[in-house]
Amino acid sequence: MTVKRILTQPSLCLLVQAVIVFALLIALGRAEVHQTPDSVGYLRFQMTSLAEALGQMRSIGYPLFLKAVRAISPGLSALPYVQILLFFSAAVLFYQALRVYGFSEWMAFAATSPLFYERLVWHYGSFVMADLPAAAFALMAVSCLFFVISSFGGVMAWIGLTLFVFLAYQIRPAYVFLVPLAPALAFVLMKIRQSKTHERRPIRRAVTATVLTTFLPLLAFCGLRHATVGHFGLVSFAGVEQVGITTQFLTKAMIERFDPELRPLAKAVLEAREREGLGVPDGMSMFPMPQFMDYYMAHQQLVCDTIRAVELRRGKSGGSPGRPSFGGSPDDQAEVDRWAQRLAWATFCARPGIHALYYTKAFFYSVSFSLYAEGLITALLLILFGIFLFRITWGQRINLRSKGPERSGLAVMQQLGALVCLAGLFFFSKILLATAVVAPAGRVLIAASVFIPCALGATILMALRAGFAVEESRLDA
Image (cartoon, rainbow, N blue to C red; front, side):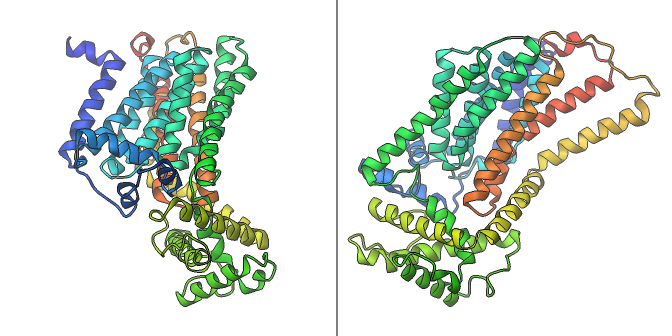
């Protein structure tokens, strides 16, 4: 096959690009295994029994993923290769999904290409962390949603949607937002598709089916955990996550309004916080958001240790202080989470105003940080600005305007609209969930913006088409 033929086939260009980027990642040392403090929780995950596996604070997905990788690489030296290849495979599937949905070859190419340069890949691909595999399965789930919308009723598409949504939040629970997002996204994408193709597929039936295929597996798994470890939830750290936020606003005055059974724990937390020099003296100030993660982690650790020392000492578990993200028996972990959840809810109800202020501030900070942290977004915006500046300054003077006819099928604006809706709904759904349960964390926020470069890449192609006289036949399939 000649070079010219490769360069005129978007699908081949995409595969060649993936190979080049993968080789570049290896050459730059991005395929060497690295660990973080969070890696320990995955590496020490115990699976001697179902109760033990389902009762730990880490979800079972990524430890199973690591176990599968160990089958071919006992020292996990192949982990970065597997994680990066998994994400790149998801990107190729996304390209195919866009084509089935109705995108032109080059528009799908422009939307998919930025995925290979995401910071999520270049920074987290080599770490023993769940971020990249979870993002890969989320990308596969979205791709299957495009397949489902384009050919409603396809069995494999529905199985893929159900499986990949389940795997995404099993590997990283932060992706549980996909469960409500999938039906909403199905509705929006079907409306956009039908507005141009004049199809009249039953949107209500498709959305209902999407609800069932995403919610039922989650409910079944939570039911299994309840029957096994006595805790109805995806993981045993919902309360542990929230308490890192709420107890920063705990004051002596509000403790008297707590349930009598909860007061000893609240007082012990307050005393421990004062001993450690944490917290806000007047209970009204708020730490600067860039520093909030440090205070959040400190409070989370303090509360978990206090629960173990004050509450579990009176029970049979007896647990010992330790990092809240791993360790302890299933009963111990579930009990810690129950007490943390009660304390977090009581604190929130006692002072809803300051919590509303925090969540509002955290949301806007998360949005701004996400766009700042992902340098690819800035680069693409600068390119787009340069294109429009060129058009405004020189375009009309030298008559560089598109003369090609409107493409049949989905119009370019419908294609771009679908990507913008996908990027926006995915971004804000993940940001809202992250803001509600944890302090703003870079790794979570970067993952939220994964589809924004896709929309920008397609916009750049659209701007180039509008600004230069390029033959439509060379750009579209």
